[in-house]
Length: 148
Image (cartoon, rainbow, N blue to C red; front, side, top):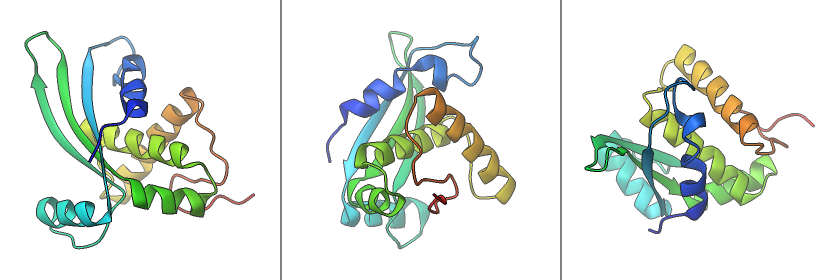
């Protein structure tokens, strides 16, 4: 597993990640890459689900000595991101950015288990994608391919 500079740059945009733009904080998040095998193990261990998944978020919410909030860890399955990028016809970097955003929203308390919560989370995710100017060609928030 290795950390990603894209994730650090993305998550330092604290004005975007703060739930309320008037409430800014120094937030740190660890971004970790894993493969299918590692993700399946993490998914089984922490979510009690056996399949491969694209992203997992582990909230920590610990204030560090320097006043920085360590929100938690986001683990991105690079192999799954690559497959999804091909399916959605986007670059691997774009798909990874979306997965990092998705994981960050989970760290901020968003949930996508219930249909209503999933819809709200997807709307917030897409607003962030637009703010960051991440192209959306061929991608939809529901995980399916957008019509062209």
